[in-house]
Image 1 (cartoon, helix red, strand yellow):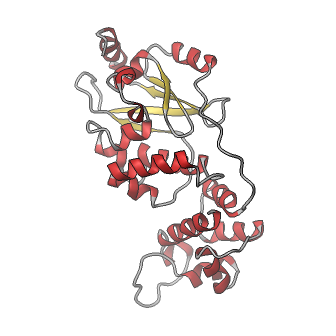
Image 2: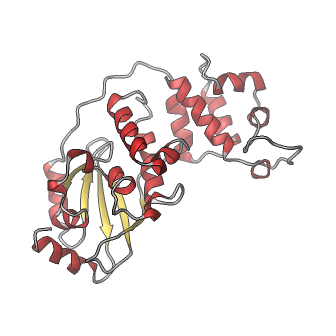
Image 3: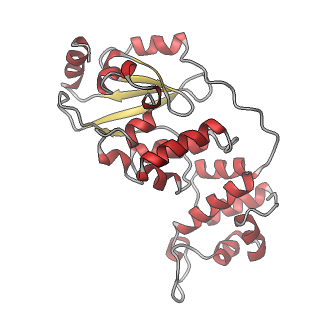
Length: 271
């Protein structure tokens, strides 16, 4: 499994580059976008046959030095480089641990943020806990079916979601998908992950397209575009902070002036 995942990752990263990106002259007509295999191999200082075997998922364990050379050749980010090392090294993997609920300390953090929507996210971006304004933002999370209490579902599948959140680059959707891959790099065959990806892909062509790009990253900061009749803002800034529980994050919306009061009115009305 690791080799096939690595092959798909290398192909996706190769396809996004042009000869000009890596200082090569474009020679001849190209039938497909991106660099050719032999160009990547030359840039990495390995043979074309060896690189082809890596992309094809044929049994081969590259050394850390080769992986670093490929990362340089493909202009990988730091997160992508770490992801490549993770998926390239086959090893005995433990069964995934059962989901862990939000801790008491994490829930206390939510209580300490009464003026802005905030959530505790699990490793697959399930919404594990939230404050009243977070529930108001998502139109009542406690009453939602379990599969809808997930930030990826809210971004990609909610019929009231804003299209800008699902852009393939520089969007909250693209960031979350990249982080989902990274957080599960050590167990790409996890059945819970596979099931989530299958459900989201079936419901959202945009999710399927972004997942196929094989990006890697981590939750961070960005913009959440809001479509809500009682919120006087089109865009909220957000930040995602890692919590001590592995895979858990605190997701906080940084509301512009005037928005918190609107959310408090929603929460008080029982929305």
